[in-house]
Length: 275
Image (cartoon, rainbow, N blue to C red; front, top):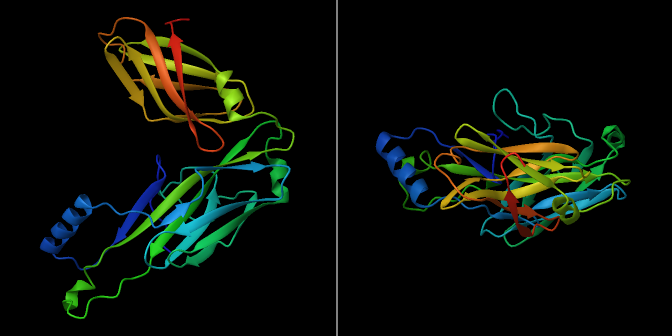
């Protein structure tokens, strides 16, 4: 199976395969794609996985909400960028086994995927979480052409493969805490760098903290970054480009962090430059 392109942000990516397209056909296909984006048929229960180190396995439920069977390929990676810009199944070793790695899911049916830890988890840090990515690649079954379809219609068909990515946090047995407690304990500071504001958060917990969005407000001006991840026992920096240019008044950072259950929790943090 040809691997999909790597996705730096977001949960879904797509790949199209087409051959022998005439210019007009290609233009019509491009317009069709722009007018109606593809939607994933496979729905993954939850938005993240927290693997409890006290347990031997975790499960994820995949449901086909489409009207055709879908072939899915499931694998884990460590989030490392590859030289060719792709994410290939099995290219990055992880201390987990996914079963099944490939599954056909019929319409309105579900498949439970089991993730087992191996002895190699002992090599992971035991005092804080580690993060991995679960990939679910779906390839729809080829549609049957209509009886009156033109002969070249099959050649001009574009197949879309969609990939969903979810974070998997491995939380060792000795690690205590939760996202809410960790997020509330974070310390924030801001400095001015030319026309930019650079905001840093200090996460002194053993838990990863995911942000859905961060918005910096000063008077009538607002700047945002799409989100991010604060690693355990580390500082994470967010640069708001151009936010300091011509701005005046008190600074406020408004953010949403994400709990283990996928809930967004809004927080407002007053900031002082150099404070």
